[in-house]
Length: 112
Image 1 (cartoon, rainbow, N blue to C red):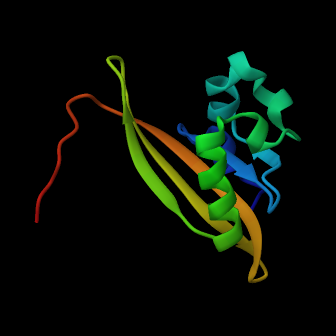
Image 2: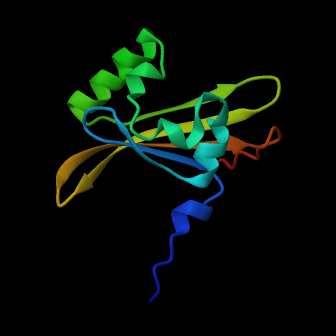
């Protein structure tokens, strides 16, 4: 199989950090979403420099506890699902992956 790089063409933002909160990868959607903050130039930057202290407290706790954090944001223009989860390489904690998915305003909720 060829080296299919699905993450680059994945339509939602994916940003990856290491165990210290340094951004080590961003897919195309993430670079575009964060263009006004530097886009690709954010690779190598600290998450702590990109967020207010209230968010940095959460990030520190996530990194220390290898903990996930998932929430919704909503503005007049859009709703977004934010998922921040740990990633691992060879069973060792590698850092965090943040996925941002813009949701349709009329999102159907299927109840079971």
